[in-house]
Length: 178
Image 1 (cartoon, helix red, strand yellow):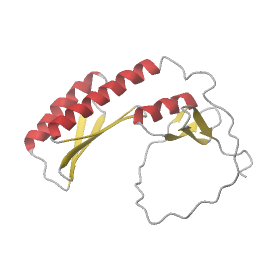
Image 2: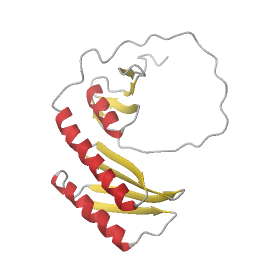
Image 3: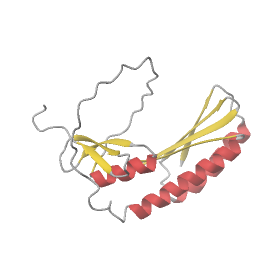
Image 4: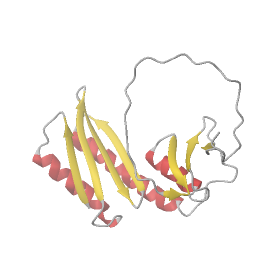
């Protein structure tokens, strides 16, 4: 596995670079040699943060950990990634429980106050056609509350999301575009 290491607002020591390569080499048993792991190291208010992202076969594994030292954060992040990989392997064998999707019933139109200025963080991803169940698995692996994907059955871009009540929802574009 290839490792691409980025240091933000800091200088990366060679010893840390070697430790990252050594720790991530344990994932070679899960992924092919052409797989890339993207590692970002940064500090924020004295805390050391490591973010690791691995994209394999359209499935993204991501972990971000914060600690007093980079080594501790790296250990936690690799443990988290290994847990995600193992969890994904077992989950692929199972299906999402029946009744996970329910029809959305719109509520009264509430008026919202306009928000002030905010930071928009942009991410790009490879859009891989998948089923809604696969999209939910991917969303849970990333630890997000929603996931955008192309539905294999509909051929449309859809969104699955986790509801506050613990169930899942899916947003599908209308057939007539209205």
